Amino acid sequence: MSVIEKRASEVNGTVHPLPADHVSNGFFGQHILSVKQFDRDKLQYIYRVADEMRSLVKRFGKANLLDGKILANLFYEPSTRTSSSFQAAMLRLGGRNISINGVHYSSVTKGESLPDTVRTLESYCDLTVLRHPQVGAAAEAARYAHKPLINAGDGTGEHPTQALLDIYTIENDLERLDGLKVAMMGDLKYGRTVHSLTRLLSLYETEFYFVSPDILRMPGYILDELRASGHHFAELRDVDEIVGEIDVLYMTRVQKERFEDPEQYEQLKNYYVVDPEFMSRAKEDMILMHPLPRVYEISMEVDDDPRAAYFRQMENGMYIRMALLAAVLGKS
Ligand code: NCD
Image (cartoon, rainbow, N blue to C red):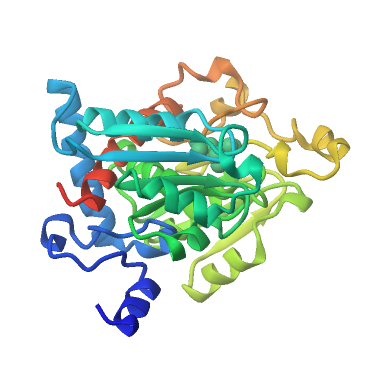
């Protein structure tokens, strides 16, 4: 490949233009950095592969699709679900993992840069999953990567694989994606999951309600994108006037780690709490979602309500990540 071709492929997010594209619907060898890379067809492709992964796990527990492949899980921020579901996804497909706690146990403590760390890991592995506290870190690291890199959360920026599993859960539970009224409530400023989810839901006919305290409103650049794509949205401080109408309520945790002033966090951490009384005012056929971890914002008494979808989201995350890994590594 000439230098110019190489540059062009880097701009497209392509790592190497290898011929297996037809078996993985354009995902083969690609970085997954932002939900902006997806359209409705690509989502449907991943969702149908995820369905197959679910039945494969239920029937056999595992497959050998990624036998011999190794995933590097590089996390500079805490994680339970994202890191372990990527690992489980790899193991269930017959691959293996290397997990690095970026902050405490890597050469980063000696001053090594992110690109050097990624280059090191990819010389041992086939794919890197990166979580990092800085917005744009995954895109920056991908500029230096020669093997696919998946963004598992870049600060307050995006969390694309979470949004994929969120929409997959909505489709599974409500059996449609167009014509839904979706409310997102809580920390819309720092919560990266709602940034990715809003972008991805804007591929569908969605009415958006953003419910937050003033200082935790959805960032202006996301609202501008919605205006540009012609979507209706409303910003509210209180959910009461719409609680009986919404199809999806997506709660978020107030992102303690992003606050400069701990006092301010203390004032906001209990701002919204969903409890059984709240759920009694919501529609019978709505779903309550949360990316987890929850802290104060959903009471445990709600967990047995069939509308509580957060444990289903969690499980779906593994099937979605199995589908993505298979597609990116060219084996679906
Ligand atoms: C989310 C995250 O890390 O952004 N967690 C997750 O990946 N499921 C949400 C959060 O931490 O509040």
